[in-house]
Figure 1: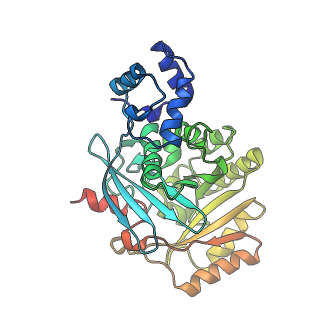
Figure 2 (figure 1 turned 180 degrees about the horizontal axis):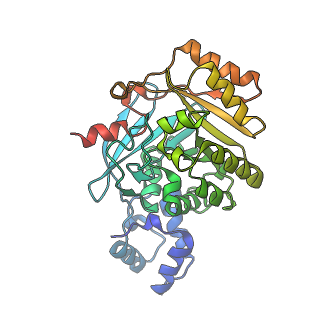
Figure 3 (figure 1 turned 135 degrees about the vertical axis):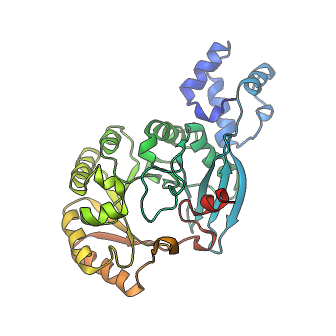
Length: 342
């Protein structure tokens, strides 16, 4: 049975109209789901009994089943959700002093095979529906009534821009005043650098944040870390990012995972400064997780700081991300992978 979460306000209004119900009821239903956080159509007390029956007969509210939840010593929570077809995805909630950020998955697995990421180890299976994407937010919103979700990052399992239509539909429902009403500037979409989709995103008219996984300042290193670079070269990607910035007047964040012995030395920092010079951007430096199977480890603290300071001296805006949830395998795909291998 279809989840009602996959319908936007216009689509729900059309369904109601076909049932002989007034369209304004769609706004009431949205309010019950997204504002009042009800989990049952019968609880929607201002709807006629006949409409509640029709809703129960034709839709369901939830599409996700939590099968595992872990909480880190730093407050980070990670959830594994089971889907109807037996697949699993992950969602992470990251609390801070004045915000709660939720990291969403957009696909079951991933086809892009980044060397340092566990998301695609077991291969790509399918896209998530818009209902399954929104369902992650709704579940966490209902589960933590005392902790309002303030920010969303599409950085979980999968490549968001490879599931473009479902991700965009989910964002518009989440951003809608009648929906979850999370501001566009508090929503970040991450990509490994799919150039046609970046160009398409620039025309959406959404003030969302774009985050591009860079991880290297040259094609040879980037291709070794990110096979997608074979299709979308670093040079072409930077051009597309420049065009995106000019068209949207929005800053881009470049994610850069520091891997010891691969991309973390000073010559790499100098080269990175050169290719980003003049762009309205910031670099988010992320020490890698330990992945013994792939001989991946983060650089020493001193090397990380030298890399950061080199960028700063060249006028590049830099942040250094503090690891979160490492004690519960909060890095993308790790917990799901362990669960599926059972």
